[in-house]
Length: 72
Image 1 (spheres, rainbow, N blue to C red):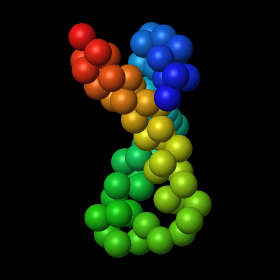
Image 2: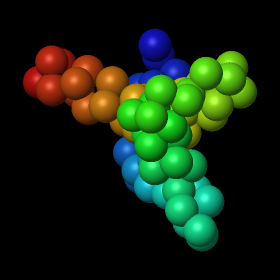
Image 3: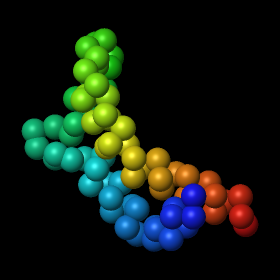
């Protein structure tokens, strides 16, 4: 997990905002995928991978924040 320590917060924050909102028009993928999840139609492996891919930067940012809080 040392690679997380090397990532700057600013880069992680920018990646998180961009990936959570991408594509911005007509609607973000995560909104579409969460709607599919609620409808029970999120079944294709590609759709599941898409959710993981778009949440990855946010997950890394949370892990980095938790690690820094524990270190202090």
